[in-house]
Length: 197
Image (cartoon, rainbow, N blue to C red; front, side, top):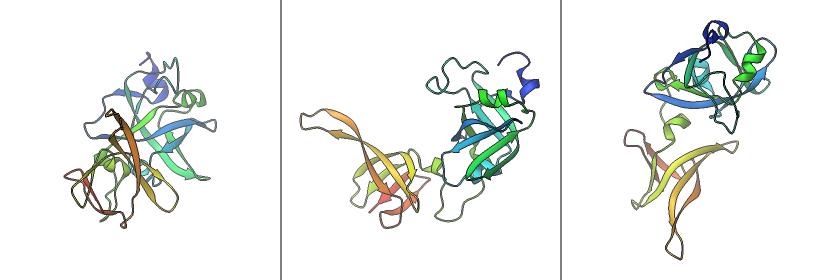
């Protein structure tokens, strides 16, 4: 981190918590008082609203070539996070400058899993589903959850698996499974397995 940056921006050098999960990305500055626009990884950004400390990492070079505001990980204290005109916006304590907010564009946002609000039965955070193995009723492994996407009324699991071509070569392939009870029997989060019908 550059000298003096902590005092002037509210950014504090930090380590990621052991239970950190990526929950979104900063899109851009919003307004002139240091607010930022957020792209959450979930259609329900409740975890962003319930956590008072967010962790940012320097953005990938594809988002911000030549980025140098900070390196590694920083933490910020959230002053306010809300939905405004259909988008998520946030204001951090000590960050009152639009130029600094713009410089955060592309930075991934991480939260400690322990800061998430509790879910009810049969409710899951997307972050908890990434990496789960998917097995059908016959015990056949269908792959691992690489991502989820929202299609409006429901979410869809993006399952990555290894496919074997006619020539015997292996390649990574993807299949989609709607995340609804018609297609998913149960989720065993402790065993990290989806049981698919």
